[in-house]
Image (cartoon, rainbow, N blue to C red):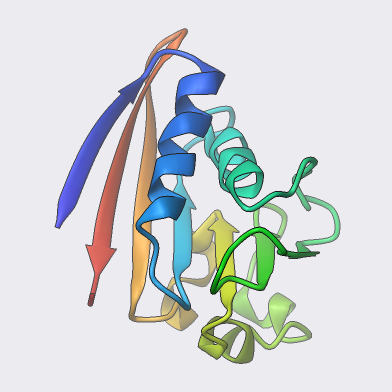
Length: 146
């Protein structure tokens, strides 16, 4: 299944993310693809807002941040990974990605997932961000092995 959205503002991008949370299944992994400044972190912030997390910052230098979730019936933790600065999948071995993605009470957001494509969970949603204009983004959501 594939859905295409067009966003003309950061608020619209966050709104698309917030609507996605409403239909999200337990144990979801979201892989966010796109160039720098394409809207990945803005989208992640929308997911966080829908889960009652008021401030989400990109974990570019620390690779992963973990947030407790109290405003959702099944999601209890949000893990946000930003893999922009890694060169090899081995660099994230200290984070047990398989365990994190295997816990159905976790929602996992991965920015720059192409850096670890060989170890991504087979069941996930791939979300592609494409800048089509200074203020416009195309957001394509594809469910993989769902």
